[in-house]
Every structure is written in C-alpha cells, then in structure tokens.
Length: 280
Image (cartoon, rainbow, N blue to C red; front, side):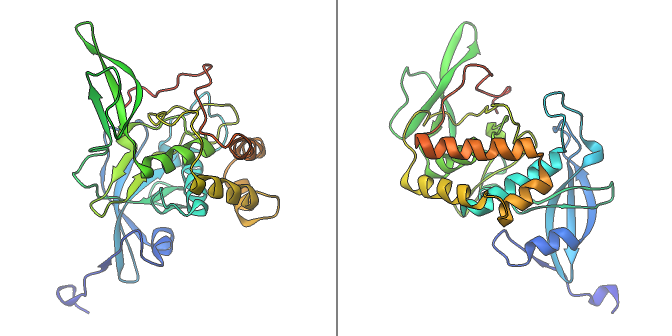
C-alpha cells in the first residue's frame, strides 16, 4: 500500500485491552528527551499492528548508579511498582513493561497527558495559615525566603490517599509533586518509581497528611489482598522475585504485614528525611 494511502494507526488509552502488548512488542521511535530528568528519559512513539501510543522509554544504560540502591535497576523497580499497583485494583501507575529498545533493555511506560500540562494542579499548595483549611492536609512548614515560612499542604483527596498507601507498600523514596499526574477524566497517576522497594525504611513523600490515621476500609481490603498475593508460589510473588532481590521481597512482605497489623498510615521514622528535595 502506498504511504499516501496507509491507514493511520489507532491511538490507545490506559483503559485499552492489549496495551501491554503494544508497549512490549511495538516498534519504538525516539522523538525527544526529557531534559530535566537525572537519568535518561526518552519520549517515544510506539506502534504495533496498526495501534499506536506515546510512551516513555528509560534505558538501563542511561541510569546513574545510586549508592543506597546498589541492587537491580531503576527500570525493574518501575515495573515492580506497576505490578503492585495493578493488584491493588487502583490503577495508580501507568501501564509499564520491561523490554528491549534502541538503547538496550529498559522500562517502557505509557505517556500520560495531564489535565493542564503539568503535574499536581489543585493537589498541592503553599498557604500562610498555621493550620490547613477544610479539604486540605498539612505536610510541613517551608522556607519561602526573606525569613518567611508557609505551610505546605496537599488535598484531602481519596486518589492521593490511595497513592499514599501504595507508596508505603513499595517504600517510595521520592514522591514529589511533579510525580503526580491528574488527567482530564478525573484519574490520578503516579510516576517515577525507580527508587522503591529498598529493604531499609526510606519512605520520603509529600503525602504525610494522613500519617498515623486509620486506613480506610478500602485500603484494609487492598492490603489484605496484597498479603495473600505475596505468599510463596502466588503469581505476584513470583513476578516480584524476577524484578527485585530476595531481601527486598522479604521487606515488601514485612511492610504489608505491618500495615495489616497497625491498620494505620505509617509515620515518619525520624531516621531518614521524610520529605524529598526538591519537593516538587
């Protein structure tokens, strides 16, 4: 068929069946690079059997070594975070696969278009009050210059609360405001999960507003499901063993058990900076 008569590929969305197949088997074409990222992050188009999508490709070859995450790769942990998210049923992480690409093996993740073109609109704010207003949760006081401080707050939003539970499970060491992607259809995604699953407690997040509070009934059910699915021999346990170390799998199970036992959102340990820098 001449190029001028070629049927244009059909674009896909996160809800489309077969999207993981497109991401895993499609032809990747690099269109640009996300310059702000500390590791190689490539914006790509992907096409498979007449279906197309935009995606992010993060090759392992472009990862900078991290002294406190010496095992495995950022790409493997990104995929592990997606696998955990899928078992929760919350769909908080965009579809993500581990595959070969133009620069070797790496993570390939669906590109998410945000509601306003940037992350976190309406979810984070700096206010001059001592206490958060109704509908908001306090994070911490921040230095805003000239000897002044402001209260950093996040929305008391069910989507964020689910993400806070996911972060506690995967031990996310870098939940920044720029990693929150709300979409025009009301969904919320979290991205950049390369520094997760450490066997030591490294939870650093902006979502401390529920620290110490009881988990929702929904979250209790989800944590119980994760506990069951992480038992030896279950598909999720087998998949985690392919992506993270045995010690990290044991630590993952321990975190899930702790959440079930306490029934509460974790609190900062005091042994590790609780908020990532920069926070957005």
